[in-house]
Length: 443
Image (cartoon, rainbow, N blue to C red; front, side, top):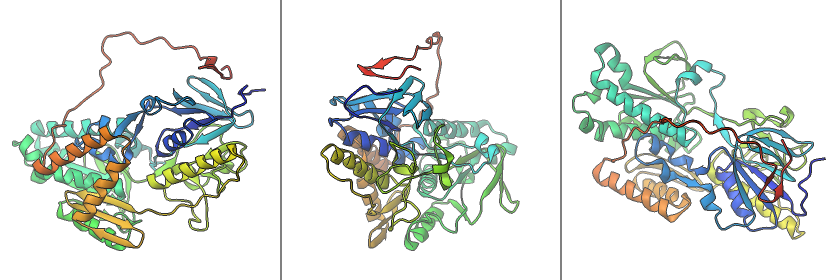
């Protein structure tokens, strides 16, 4: 029978997003043995990913090496791996670096892009759910502008049409950033191209942009976008895209070589988690303590968790604030158990939502108050700076923002593409039998 062979309980956390990182940091230097597993060796700050895609920030400004975060801990082990399977009966997690036994499994696996089963859209569009996605999109945007220089009349307009699908914060912020790039940067970088022909379309299926925010924020966000020249189309959806032609609901078509998909998310799925515990959007149903219903020792935290409460009967909003609050609360319950104290049920207290559309243009909804304009923009900047993990990153981002504000420009428009070079690939490693003295189950 698989066992951790330790008096200390082993907590395995899958995912180093907001929820996973908060959970691991909350259990730092406690009497739990913590394994933090992620496919990347860094935490990525998703709310500013669109600024990486539009060459306003470098990826290192919004990425934080996990090993740096836990340099001074004695009980957190980092493993960079893909999860392959979980045996919930034997409590064994199978990964690309070996099988790991656990006492408690905390799933902070978040969400991935939802293409609503449209495989042609998936194959031909650009998502923006990770730093590599954002870098790929940045390269594509910049290469498109280079291609416009030599493009013939027949293909020029398709290169100059950008379609962004999804009118939530990501789509709105990306559309606003691209509109400001069109106005302030592209005419100086490419004087030979007539960028008055560049069209940015924002397609949203609901009746409004930022449809989950207040009426004032919905209305104002659309006004801001349209003043910047963005063509906003609400109440319609994309039904097909072949890499050049976008077909909308009702049969209307747009010609565009670039379609950016920010239209929805669905939970990541781990093989071995039974479908019976999944609800709409592949979220995992939990009780008020984060325990996945019917699975011993398995917890779901953050975006992947569906935790109905009296205040949120349909689950909590899939926001960073909610993920952090839920994670910190459940980790606190873990620490309470070490002291023999009873667990406390979780409820989220909404701290508000916000989005920026451009320079001095933002909308903010706080409990009991909603405001827009320059004050909202300053509020948005302050909150996002404070959410960054360390002072160095805050300073770098702040300096980039100030230079951009003063000059209406940035110096980061670099196409950085992977080059394998001439070196031979490394041979595959054998799966380890143990990890820093703590036994693993052999693969």
